[in-house]
Length: 261
Image 1 (cartoon, rainbow, N blue to C red):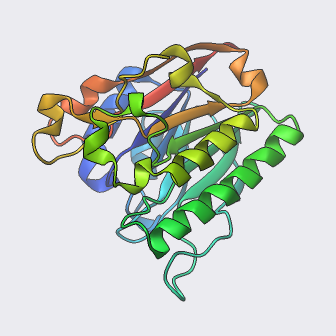
Image 2 (image 1 turned 120 degrees about the vertical axis):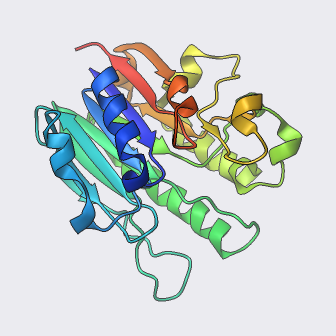
């Protein structure tokens, strides 16, 4: 079972690249973030032509998540974590979608960026992370086979960024962000990519600015967390880095994990 995550950075703009990746890599489950479209504009029929069934949680121009499954319909379990955005009256942002596929609980997330920090957006990031931890801890306690994946907007350690100095003031690398991520791991989750690449140096994001891709100035913020029973089935995990270099690519590369049946 290959489960993948891809921050597509606008599904309308990246649809040809997304379909290309699905055809070439054929993940069993593909979780998307930053689809940036309303529910009624989600191109479900394009995925159905490839044999994928989808559920999605959209938002106009911002955020948005979706779960695609090859040959089966994802069984939706929850959308949203019940936490309002950082602005008064804003309501909940489209950042979380949870489904069951082939007996595995899939938790697809697009965690708040948190910049600028300090400030209300950073406070929202930390509150959102704590709510996520509560939800996922319940899955561990119930011993539900679970994969939590997506764009966490957290650089876990110094080994996960091309230059610590370049990102030291960013919300992605603040001690509070890292501590929240570490507390979640300490609950019993396995970071699949880190487990198989303990020395680091694996990037999932390269900014469009300043030649970051050409210079390989990236960092790791897209993660795949496995519950203990799924960690026991871990065969491989990686980053489809080459897709970041294609025409009109997302600024993220897809990440994936392969689990034994």
